[in-house]
Image 1: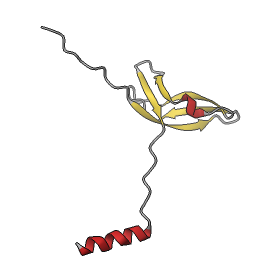
Image 2 (image 1 turned 120 degrees about the horizontal axis):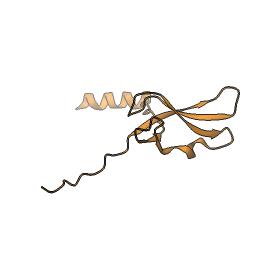
Image 3 (image 1 turned 180 degrees about the horizontal axis):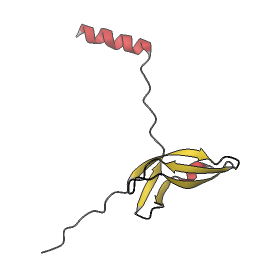
Image 4 (image 1 turned 90 degrees about the vertical axis):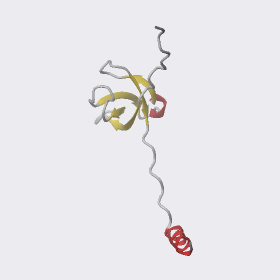
Length: 95
């Protein structure tokens, strides 16, 4: 039998938050839950003078079970303004 052509599994994306180390100028990206082991991991993000966004991207998990992508969580959707909500209510009532 021939081997099946399998695509490699996509690298999981994890959302991170920026933490500073008290008493120092060092910043860390904190992964809330590792997709492999479920533990909390920390990755260096530089100092207060550096741009921590440069350290986002694919990194190896400290548990050694694979790699994941450090990403910022998506921004929440903006609420409709009061005027737009009222307008949509009137348009729904006309139909």
